[in-house]
Amino acid sequence: MNNQGQIVFYTFMVGVVIIVLALAFAPVLKTHIDDVRGNSTLSYTNKTIGLDCSNSSISNFDKATCVVTDLSLFQFIVGLLVLAGAVITARRFLWIKMDKQCLELQ
Image (cartoon, rainbow, N blue to C red):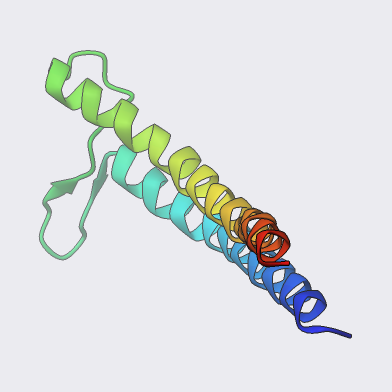
């Protein structure tokens, strides 16, 4: 197998690893997002934590924060999937450029 064939397999492996990491970290991130959005009390300090997003009387700033927090899981997964796609497809465009340069030299 030549060098380009090895690079193709390598980029696919890196892309798949990024996809697997995105899907593996998603449940952990969702748990943290649910904790942030909820309204819970710390037992040892009796302080309320969380944004209390289900409350309709929160301020507009808190409502916007709840929306951004909701979107963070989607942005995380889509960002890593785009990164994986970029890793997989970037070498193809580089090869096309390299092939054109090799043709010009001949």
